[in-house]
Amino acid sequence: MASGMILIIAAILAIIMANSAFSESYLAFVHADIGPMLSDKLGSMSLLLWVNDGLMAIFFLLVGLEIKREFVDGRLASWDRRRLPMMAAAAGMAVPAIIYTLIAGQNPALIQGWAIPAATDIAFAMGVLALLGSRAPTSLKLFLVTVAIVDDMGAVAIIAIFYTAKMNMMALAAAAMIWAVMLVLGKCRVKSLTVYLLLFACLWYATLLSGVHATIAGVLAAMAVPVETTPGAPDSSTSPLHRLEHGLHALVGFFIVPLFGFTNAGVSLGGLTMDHILSPLPLGIAAGLFFGKQIGIFGAIWLSVKCGIAGMLRGATWLQIYGIAALCGIGFTMSLFISGLAFAHNALFQDEAKVGILMGSVLSALVGFLVLRFAPLADDHHQEEAEADAEITLDGDVADISDRLAMTYKGASA
Image (cartoon, rainbow, N blue to C red; front, top):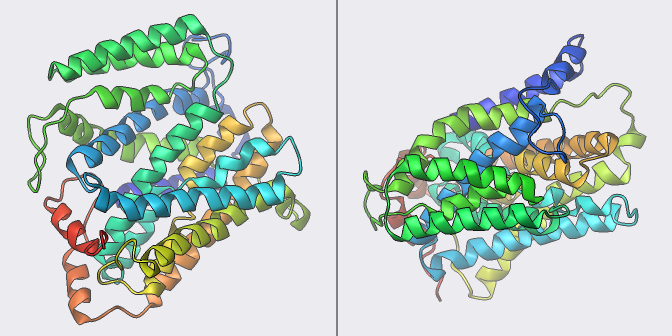
């Protein structure tokens, strides 16, 4: 929760800096050359590149660890639990992409940005939920986390498939060999995190040289780290995956993601007119995030419940579910990241994309917050349950939430 608030502050600070007398200093800081040139493709390594291609690989390592844990030992361990969030996440990625394509896709130069509104920023969304306290039922918090995990899987696949440049086959072969070694070590139950982290660094560099975006190395490395399952119990203290995941949360949540927001969110709003705002690129992104997420996620849940594919989320009303669907339109971190890949060589398009991301994310946050703030609660019993569980976090430190999730999806297999 706190990390989401820090991300919000970092993003606001970046926008203020980019539109103040300190704008030149801000840009000089973001684009300052740091360290050696690692590849001809990237050129000099600026702070921005180190953050986007280096530190964000650690962010994706954490994402990969969370995905693996949830599929092996968590809330996505069975198909009954996966069904509704998978359907909601898939619709929540497809509809925004379709809306963007309808608005901006007529221009061939803009079609690459179709995936920008498809992502959800879980840290930002949970930060908004933290402001609501007990007004947001536990079932909705758990559902948002689960949808975001599936959403992250989709975003990783999109980056790997659609935003991969011309590949260096030698470097790609080296990356494959390193990953194979990591998988073998994982199968052999090697528990030394030092070994996995050193090989992760090598895998990252080989992936960087290969042409596949370097952050994919984080997800691949996570798949190799062994996990000790503890169904219905707190995480194992000897499990390498759990230890690494818990060790990375503070670094990622309180440093890497806020630094990413600060270095990427700064966009000059000077001279911004309605013509700029209503131009196809920012309008397509904003509409995709704001309308696409609501239509896709709420529509998928409504159809699933009405068709008997899944049960109604426990303790939640349809208005509250709509509020959560709106919050999923906050695409900040992932959307900024994908926009940098889609328009890597066009600074103007990157700035226009940032405007669209900010518009769509802010509108989604405001509407989602207001709906959840003023929506009637289901009943007093569920309100008390929500108050008791209002401090649920994303890092797995709160035990036994899987049992409550099973109740949340009660009837999902009907």
